[in-house]
Length: 257
Image (tube, rainbow, N blue to C red; front, side, top):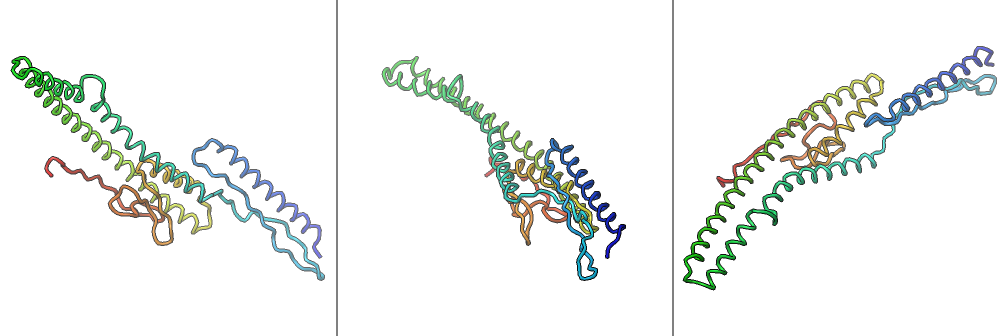
């Protein structure tokens, strides 16, 4: 039959479990404003009891692991929202520039074309008028100049977009590299029985950031991990290993097509 020392040991394990639980709770409170932090819980389990004189006596409890709160459904919803937000943001800036070029207000291409067609109406009313003929010619030249200006501006926008894409691709590849490094750290930690919650939190934050920057969807399965989106091949990136496929930005001179 268990003696006094066994009773004290049960009390010791109970105090140890509660101490560890308080440490985990304190850590949760300390990280309440930490971006990407997932709540952790001390999972306690009863120590297998011992039999004595036909009775089973408990041996207290131990903290078996520190679990990390994880909801795959919510995480998928967040990544999908980041993907849509990224796609919208990527389109909004170039479209805002284009809107200025094709605005119906001010001295622009639309105004020049309206003046050009108005000069033809004037000429139709007075076909022999030298002033009207000169006006048609001059306003025709104005339209040509306006088209040339729009073409120049569009080239500038295209150049800006290409430069922005090159910069974003560098950032995306850098983040893919960070994910690959985190995958290695997570695998090494779990292989030695340690938790990798902090690394997993960082990895999830990177996934969300990558979904927003690339406008892509993260795929996770038994056979394939990676991102699917505006890439030439699916599965680009790093999801479950220590290596990744780099993303390249390819430009094409449409004037030569």
